[in-house]
Length: 218
Ligand SMILES: Nc1ncnc2c1ncn2[C@@H]1O[C@H](COP(=O)(O)OP(=O)(O)OP(=O)(O)O)[C@@H](O)[C@H]1O
Ligand SMILES: [Mg+2]
Image (cartoon, rainbow, N blue to C red; front, side, top):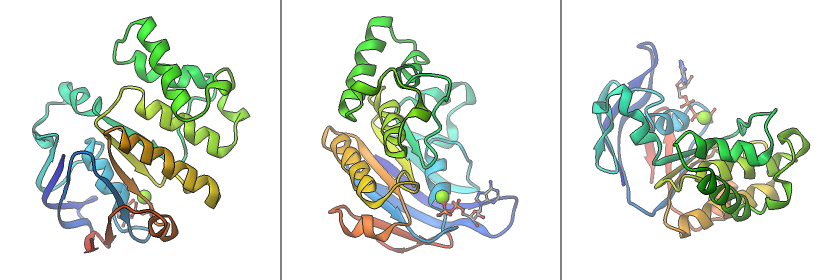
């Protein structure tokens, strides 16, 4: 569950990026965050895994008051959150398998678990056969599917996606939405930021629309 209460955020004290945002996203929900460029979508997601701080208000993630988490305990928040970005952020000199396995290694899993979970994640995104390829040998859609496999390999409770289809054609974009949908059906809470209204309109999920840091529709 994600709860925001009266969140205000400015970057270097200028115009607010988030202006009195309150919202509740229930466990197991799938929600789109929409709105034009500069609306505050990325900022909102970054608050949730404490990539950015906020000026006032309260954010609870799975019941944790995230502003109170000590720096040395941030991994406890972040291991419950998988994040997917527009530009994939894969390691170019590592294979598909290694890119996904790495996320499992950093949480200290055994070699056997790493292998099992990595292959399982790659299977879920339909990329088992590409496990020995390097990211740059893949299409954009395939690279994004690797990024999704990496985001789900630790079975996080929450999956955040920041414009994950921004570089993809419409068919591939829908395919990516379907993968998030499957993750959601397996129990993950999904928060999917996109300015692509088509994608939102074609899906059955609710949306929260931001404009200039405020919720204008939900
Ligand atoms: N690191 C930063 N430093 C200063 N200002 C920032 C920073 N990041 C975002 N902003 C500003 O905060 C506001 C919200 O930006 P944000 O990136 O959250 O919007 P967005 O809805 O994700 O836009 P887009 O659709 O273009 O990705 C914008 O006015 C932006 O210029
Ligand atoms: Mg953004």
